[in-house]
Length: 238
Length: 230
Image (cartoon, rainbow over all chains, first blue to last red; front, side):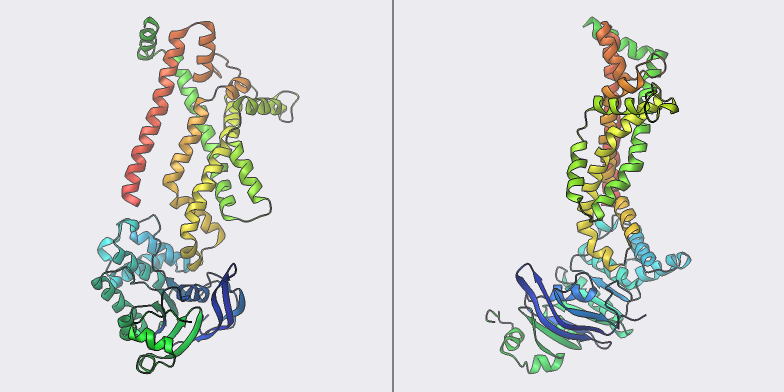
């Protein structure tokens, strides 16, 4: 059972009377990494949470390859501040593997493989909540991979990491993308977008202003806000 | 002063009657905690995780029931178990089992209400991750109860403290029968009214020491667990 493509039609989301996202149409297909970019407060996180199925749109509809049931099948998310269960690193990962429905007899092997992949092999018995920010993000990434996702959603996972931890995570993301996992990631780090993105969706004040290949967007943004964002200016107008 | 040293002598002498009283106190209150935990932990977790009509009222009621007066609980269980009561045929009145029942009724709301709070706080932290992992309702409850385990030890202690310290409920349903249903608190009440202050004080000292020891070990456990689990 596949989760792709995800199709959003006329999706709006509001908190009380405050609109967060306005009338979005977007289709997420397999392929190169798609980055949701835009200034803080543009609605990036809300959009990702909608696509993950954690919240329901106020109006409009989201369709995951033919179903509107938001229960996750082959998709996973890594949050900016992932929550570690109050257990060891390995137990966190076993929990995710168990929830993903992996047979008990295969869990230990897969757990060890995933920990080795993200470079946490030596910390398997460490309490997960005692990890550093970078290590937590790696464990969150491993937990997401435990679901064998087709669609991996990442919400500014490197926003509070130092450069070496950021590099390590970017390499993992690149590797996952190389193995055919669709990456859908929010970022406001333009350097990171240039390094990883195949195409970008530019979000501003809850609207999609541009949707283009990374190269096209950076070389020739079609909107004034897009140009300002690419130049690194603060955008204050609508 | 003389009475104080008399109390100490009594404690140190290892009087078998005294230790029978202490033992029964512990057995009754720990059994009550076990029964109350069996009901209160899942109940509190369930209320924390489900939305139903009248939920706010249920929470207020549960919180209010934390302050149930022991004598009233004792009276209710007495009426239930008395020969003409609905459970009179069980023949449990004035037995340790009746005392366990009364204390369990007394502390189940405490354990359920505090569990509800602990689980609900943790759920607000875990909600997104667990939803994204596709965790179902039952597994959600078990996961949160397990991950809140450090806080829940304190919850159980609060229940034990309440059970071990109360006198009204066990007095009414147990009857304070010497060698059968006499526990520390009922013995203290009796000996004080009889004027045997050394025995009353000796029992009082032991009661305080036990409560202190249990809390100290729970505290040590908590420190250790926090270092291990985070």
